[in-house]
Image (cartoon, rainbow, N blue to C red; front, side):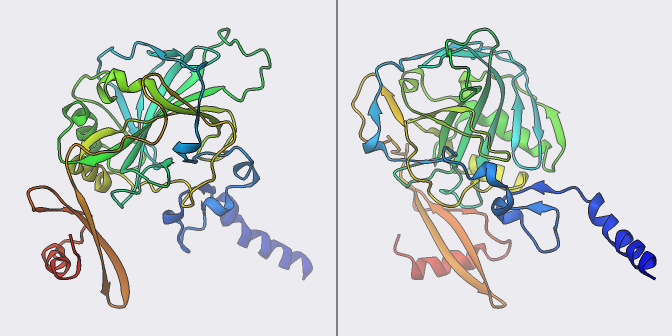
Length: 341
């Protein structure tokens, strides 16, 4: 009898053992998806002292004259890149064809990939924040340390990876340099899809003007996804990339939306430094190229609240962002009555 009971227990447990658990974001956690491990189950490695992302308190950052300007190599090379949807983000494979050095880095680093972070909410998509302010998206260019180039005698692996982070701000001017990447998203709407881009572009085409690359924040932190290894030297640039809100919006329904890895604002990390070669620190320049007002309204449908959002630009017209089909005009009419914009 006991043997039969044991066999039944093992048989019942076997399907669960075959189901491979994987990490996911909080908005992907559902009772029916028992293999999805949300942030509260990412493990102790994601709860250490020097975790990323952080909220950058700009007034507390100190100028470090040892940081200096970056040297970029291969960033101007134009080609048609491979892009893939890995289920958590979209990733452009950079194939080690570009390097960075300088900027206070102790080695030369080779570019591996760049990827994007965003959210369903237009101004809550970035992982890092400036003085509590988030942005529409955040772009990371991920580099690995090139063997034999390190000046770090300690070899403690805290700077094995160098990430250049750029905030992306939604405005009302189209960024033509970003358009090839935006259009490529239409070809990889589901996880594990990949394609080659139709148009050539360089990494530099995606970045703000060269002069603005002199202004950045620096700290030692971690990967923002499991296992959250604390081996990343972060460079968070002060000047955001400007995209039209439609370009940001186009990314949202095409690929699985990626909320920030941590909904809380993480306290300022120890060792945060700023490099600004032309002006003193005192806050990020986040002035958009044109004025936008983000309008939100909560609708209750069959007892369930639904948050809708859109933007109002200088021409006093509205453009939909993430609205449920058929409700757009009704929501706009309600907002005109209830929102002072």
